[in-house]
Length: 402
Image 1 (cartoon, rainbow, N blue to C red):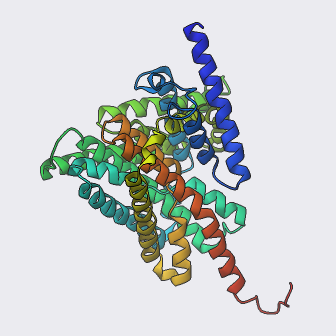
Image 2 (image 1 turned 90 degrees about the vertical axis):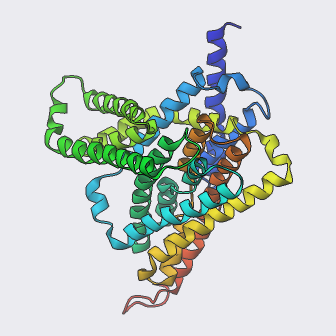
Image 3 (image 1 turned 90 degrees about the horizontal axis):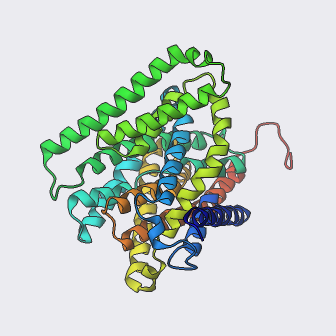
């Protein structure tokens, strides 16, 4: 079979497997991304072998396609994040977001260092514990019909803040790789560089877009707002790598800038076909890179258990204490809502593997942890919200059964 035809056959197998996996997962009331990653495990080198090990090495066509997919994914996440919305979430959401980053990062880095990682690499491992999947939690809250509740608003607001802090943190720890030890002066410089890049691009870019978005209507082509936004996405993705940051950080900032366009809803609609085509490749290939043989050992299974417990407890603690002003039960709901790592943890794990920071075992464990936290959260959150709703007093003047 000719090389081009072989690639097309592989693309066909990956795409179909992704759709089947996502469909099965959603019928089981799980996030579609879970099914896509599991599909990757099934057709990958360590199972059916439909994807060969040499096909998913860095720089190969499949790897490049996956990179484009994740860049567009983070662009779409940024497209749903506006600076004005962040200002409205209040003190509770801010505290939940900040504590939801600090606690998992500290516990994750201590665990990684205790398992033999140098501090610089430990910080990268810890970054995979940090970000909450706003998409997974939002879908659960939407399905339960509780998006108007104060707990839901705090969870979603905190998840956005959480993601921004995670992107910033990822930029810092990525820049620190390559040195065996941490120099305080170097750390402060890297932090200032990352903060400066995010602040200048995010703040100045959104301000300019608010005032000049009407320029995007001048070209005759009706798709010009989309094509210009994608150009900004690719340009900032490249620029962020020049600053030693991950490409996805630039893509996320590009999405935030594009969210200020008055064509925002149209952009979100136009992005859906691109996301439907390209992001499944990232998640399937992520699953294909997992060596399932790793979990044949009791050591790896024990490590997965410990990592998952740390991931759950750290987010639960950070969310609970951050939202304690809402009351203990509401704080518990917020803490549980912050648990799922989902696609964000998977993205960071993939970056760690590509950078040579993660071993195959750590990579497999981190991805599995991201899946487990995404699977166990929805039913627990549904139970807590149902109990709270059942225990709330009926409105004055209502009758039982109303």
